[in-house]
Figure 1: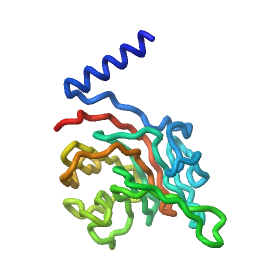
Figure 2: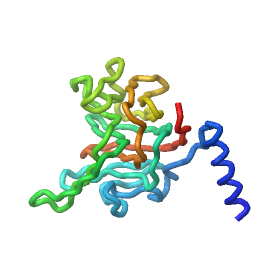
Figure 3: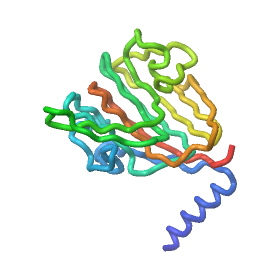
Figure 4: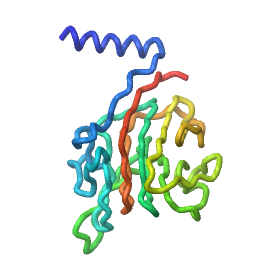
Length: 210
C-alpha cells in the first residue's frame, strides 16, 4: 500500500510541476499483453509475434488493426518499424471510431480504426500526402520520403496540447496545429494486407499544458 501511494504521489507531483512522466513499454516482445483487436475483441489471428516484433499476417479475407489497451492524451510515442517491399501500413491515434464487418464470401472479417494516421508506405509513386510520414491524405511531410524497405526505421508521434509532430529517424518531418486540445484515445497499428513489423514500442505522457 505504501509503495502504491508513493507511486501515485510521484505521478501527481510530476503532473503538477509540468514534468513528463517516465517511459512506458507498450510491447514486451514476447506476449500479446496490452494489445487487443481494434474493436476490443481478443488479440486476432491476423498478427503474430516474431523475433521480438508484432508482425502482420497478410490475408485479404482477414485483416484487423490492433489497439493498445491503455489510452493517452498528450504523449510522445516512439516505435520502430520495417516494411516488406511494397508494404503499406500506418499508426493511428486520436481515434474517432472503429468499424468491424465481414464481406460476402470471406472466411474472416475486417476491423479498422478511424482517426489520424502516421502513414507507412513503400511506394515512390504515391502522392505526397500518402507517403511515409504524412498525415494520411491530409498533409504531406516537409520533403519527399521513400524509406528503404526491409530495414528498421524509428518514428515518433508527439501530441502536444496545441500541435502534433511526426518524426522519422531523428528528423522532424511534419507538424500541424490543433484547434482544440486532443482527446483521450488508444493507439492503433494497421494491418493493410502487407507485411510489416513493429518493435520497441514505448510511450511517455506529457504535461497537459503547453
